[in-house]
Length: 367
Image (cartoon, rainbow, N blue to C red; front, side, top):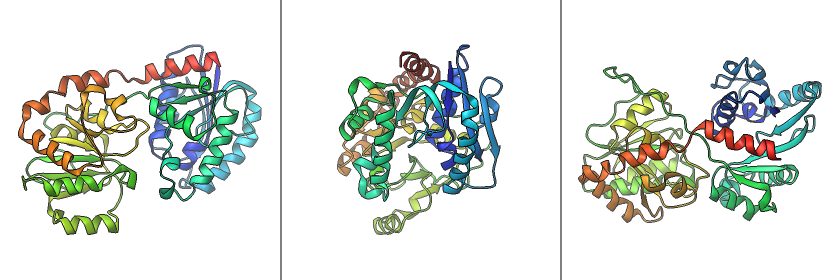
């Protein structure tokens, strides 16, 4: 079975969850001898070792001085228009983003629906209408649509006129972070504040609901409790004003860029991960925390109860007092924190790229 993946995601990002999804999926498909994944990536600077997938995966790609964006996308579109027809007809074309490339010939077209953030929060996405229009065309033409969770599927059916029988839920796999070796000194870009700390990981767009963590930290009676924020870029003006107004600046350490080893170390030493997002199609940080033995306190919304199961603590993301109360309880009760440790390890084991590949392959074969 010949399966084709296009350049779209790697043209638009050098790192990110969607490109990691296709990399891990292609790598897991190598366990199936009758599957021949082919990737026409063109010019790219991905941090993921796509070339390392050879010889099992045919990868056509070249390192580029161009950063991610429209220029690189346009050049790769020209490359695809020239080379894709020469590859012949594929059994499956799994489009990687918001278009189906007309130059690719395939018996079956498959798409993956990750989330509906632009439809749920159009005020946060200037191109929300254009994204919806492009995806509408993709989903109309696709023979099957993979959804990464049940809420992701429900959103797809809500916002797009898609027959339910065309959809199937296939969870992501999970890749454990590489832990730092015992006894080695962690070279973090900033020192971790003294005392116990909460951990926040990921982007801080409005629907990620980060500000509720700041307010809950300010309400906590233990002033030695600190917060480490990983990723998400520089503080916004609104965030700076809120931090200053709450008087919690000295209790926060922001670390925009960390290696997997450094992040793993933070998870292992953190009192609790706080994940207050209002909306997630899947959500990896809670699983990363569980894998490191760190308790996860997550919002009771969207896909998170499905993905985290009984292995997390839950709160209403709109209720800062409930979040604060949970932080008081968890910081005061080590036994309570540890009660989710073994369930967390068991929950993480439910997700593997091998399982994801097998379920995806079943869709390819039955389409």
